[in-house]
Image 1 (cartoon, rainbow, N blue to C red):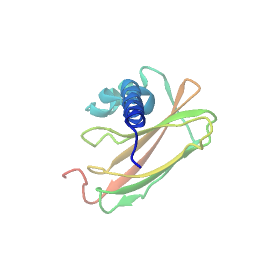
Image 2 (image 1 turned 180 degrees about the horizontal axis):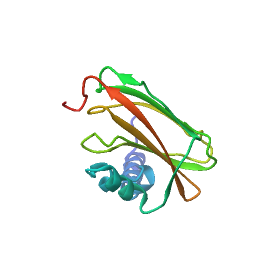
Image 3 (image 1 turned 30 degrees about the horizontal axis):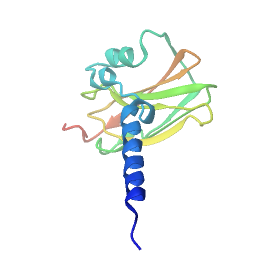
Length: 153
């Protein structure tokens, strides 16, 4: 036996209502995109666009694992972790790229602040990692030497 007209209409109406509700709340489903931070041309502007004017202090509680020499800047493996309590975000910058902000991660309280990724680096430069915790910013810097540029260089 086939589906009744009434059940068919209920299914279609329910599906349409679900789609309408999801379309009205994209901000709740996706992380905020920091357009100004990702399109900034220099490190200071990218940091200011991402974090405003919060003061930054250097920290040994953030660890960057990356090769000292990257043979190809097109894919440089990077791991960042922190023992700072209450980290809410981790951002990775490299000032030599066309856009210095490479990646930014929001960290939930129940998460361990530990991220791994492969990034592109235009040329030899510092990796600058900034972690936000308790309304403060913490920074660590590490140089990576690139033998073949990965951003068209």
